[in-house]
Length: 369
Ligand code: MRU
Image (tube, rainbow, N blue to C red; front, side, top):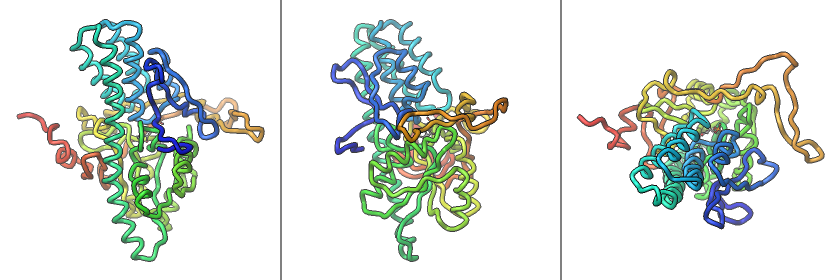
């Protein structure tokens, strides 16, 4: 992503090669603030308080968090404690566990004095691989958008309308995004796209983050309330839905930001294709039943009862929406059953949302007999 003309990732090593820098996503879209992480505690806070968020970026931050933790000691105990504490920061995105398992398995085999340098190297590799996977899935997804656009153009349309939920864009990954990578690739290829951006209550990652990065990238878009999607689909104003995912089961059930399931239901009722963009590390090969087996994060009810934004004087303010005494509950994610998903867009190609479909792209995951 180019910001103010400069190629920028969402996480990078600081100039001294020790700290790690991130964009504080709680300050977007109004302020672009870079924060420096130096310790395990900093990395825990960055993920837990959602300075960084989005499944792939959570994984990359956790990987760097292990490197930061090892600055204070490289014993087995320190490594295990760092992985345990980072794993506890957010429960749903499986990329977190994947990145920590990867770091731990590589570092455990090394002598303690070799671990610090190796941890930085491995975290950098996880980040680079995320960029490459998202760029590749973007190409595969852009092919779908190109085909849809050819049909819409033949029918007299002047643009292709894409609907997305939450933020599964550049800001949710190290670069490119998952759901939005196909959008960026298709936009670069000259396809006239327009994106309906679900605001995505309660934290409004759509209204604040997706809108922000589509603006930076010059992609036409319109923010809508979360309940508008069904109406737009009934009136032929959505050609395709593309969302990201925090964890997809081996059978193709898709867990993503709360409200995704309702979009998939509306899409099915209106014959709108519903695609999910995901890099391989978002697949949890250990589970089959998304509704029963994926842990759903419950966050502070204050995110529902209050809303924050910028007042006319430019100050950041939080406003209470609900009456004193009314309770609220804040589930972060829901599960869209595989049967409602048209296709999974991965770095290896597009497949049906099913065990067979996923194994056709990842044959190395077939159980050994
Ligand atoms: O709670 P968040 O902001 O971390 O949730 C993010 C999402 O649900 C994204 O859609 C998902 O992580 C896919 S990211 C490429």
